[in-house]
Image 1: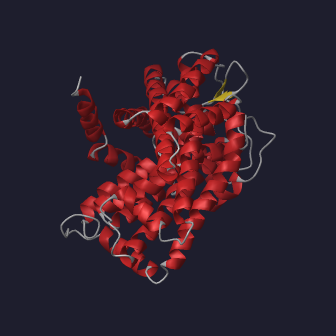
Image 2: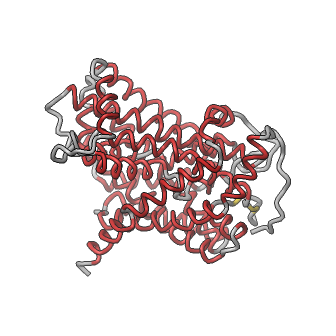
Image 3: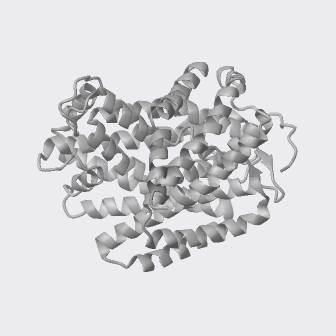
Length: 457
């Protein structure tokens, strides 16, 4: 029994090694080329994300679906993850993290398209979609769909729930010395008040929460860049230089070498934006949209905001702080972010604390919906209430318990989630290409799609 945690950790290390990184990045690159670089339509995607398509079928607006996906995606990976990448892979890791986001836009686009293409109406008249339905109706592979949902339901309880509540409890205790038990009770009440209303309740909170928390964190980054303005050009230069420097200068942040920069930059980028994981398309399927490509573009804009903007800003700020303040210990990822924000007079630590709190709390809400939809596919909508009850209990357990093994199990489940989804993306890339050619490149973006002949779930 004592060896089980170590075994799980080793399995996670193997699964998230170079083969998975190459598979994910290869999928990003393959879809980018096959779809003729949909990244160039990113400003169209942003424009669509703030428009309403109310005459179309769906449970929530396109922006609400995007906000919910961003709520689940933007989190500690954007803040602590980038710092860890710099600590282990050097400043060059920021470039590879950013590049992963640029290429990942094509994968997130494809996931969103398939989610709308193969979505169904459940017994309550709500939309249900995601990789499980693409696997079942697109690839005719029910067993892969079931596996995806099992992995999703388990991963959601871990990385999307207990890990997040644990992070919040520790954060609040360290800053305000509030007992984790009281934090856990408070989180249980807040989460319960939101998820009881289902996707519409979650989406309503996220549409308010996500812009606010992103603006607050980006504001802190811009403030730091203004403080370190003399070091920002040098920071960008160091990032680009270290991204292509083969010789390592002995490990650590400065001079880690190109291979280490690629490894940790790509890994943290993939973890941050979740492109290829299969989570975001589950909520994309609930969007009110007239055809699959419109929502695909909206979904793709999530990766743009998450990695191309927020992770890049974080990276530039952290590297500029390393250059400006030699006293910062850049070899410790989490401490690096905290030390950087402490350079903002009076408000720095508070800004970081609030950002981390809001990121983690919103992640709990977004992943709850993912888990619910996985359970719905495996059974029926009547078991969603049972899952919500388990979810609320897990929020409290996460706040008061030590969760090293939960982190490791969640890492494994996330990787296992990605595999069926990547299979669907690659084998159904022809479907994605045909839809993209018709609606996007042949200028039919405003057309309504013909309904798919798919039975109700």
